[in-house]
Image 1: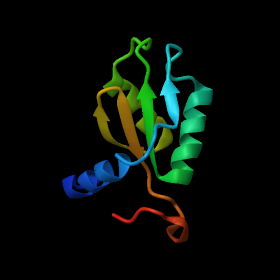
Image 2 (image 1 turned 60 degrees about the vertical axis):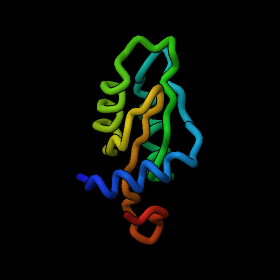
Image 3 (image 1 turned 120 degrees about the vertical axis):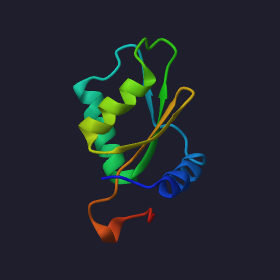
Length: 98
């Protein structure tokens, strides 16, 4: 699943108006955390995560691992924020059309 730069731009714009719903702390990515992110991205389609300063891992690596494990796409990593997107599998429940 790939998106074009135009679609990525639209998603970035939408992400500006949402608050982060998860924080990645020093315990980093646990299986429970990954499952919670998967459920959230399945339901909301577009989510934002905040990487805390006490996390020593690379933010881009965290984003890539979460995207792979949740089946989502990394929209952007900016500052300490990660934005992930995943199409809602059911077309009738999709909130975001790009």
